Image (cartoon, rainbow, N blue to C red; front, side):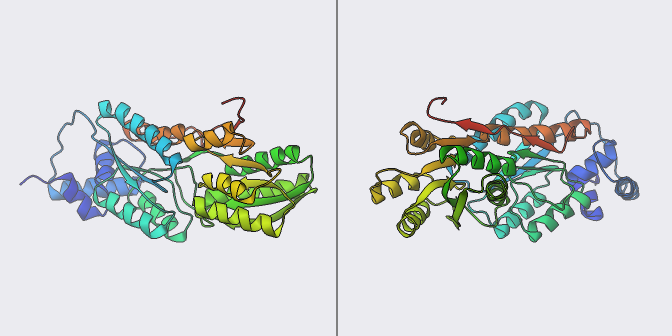
Length: 336
């Protein structure tokens, strides 16, 4: 009975894709690992067959699947999938409902069992996920691209997404202009374990302290990307501190801003900045509920990672740079 690539992968403890790259001499793979695979294949009596197409599998792991922002990310993923079909490259998508390390770890283990050759992930910032990714990269030779959120301490190939720290700084500059350099700012984030949110908060708060000392921070609150929580945070904060003049909503659940302002019956609302050009957020901007919207090109964040990984897998190429930043796009109701 003929020896299969899967049997060699099981014997050597690596993925099918790593075995394929080693036997065909292409792609990025540790020299010692490649030699061990080839030696094992020879010992097992493997007879290599010529293949017409590579038949690679790219795994993708996302977060917050039910959010409006992810609909545009998924549109980018599906467009990449459509284009890659001609190369016989398949995309396997695992959508996470939360920002949760256990949920992500389960998705990564499922993708490993399905024999993926490469991975794109919106990683939760946790040691568990960091260790798992490093094990997939180092021991199994699986190239990894992070997108939307990044994770330090791994040898991932590159990051695709917004420079979140810089976007937070941009929001601080906008808020200073809106408030003429003085006022009290309320910040609403999503999940405190989300590296994206934390980077935006750090950029905003740091820039206020360094460049705009007349702006005072009224607090940073977590909303879990929930509109009801956003509403509750704004209502309570403004009842306790009626002099709040600026609100920066980093999270999802932005519809809660409208409900909060309606409930408070404000004569003059605080200046407000939000993220992501979703249909509901576009309406908030058009109706004057918020002043500025920072868009981060969600479609590109879904589209670029599988295209980059396909290039690595098909041609054994290396990425040209470590960071593929999307634009920090500032929208008002006048330039939609």
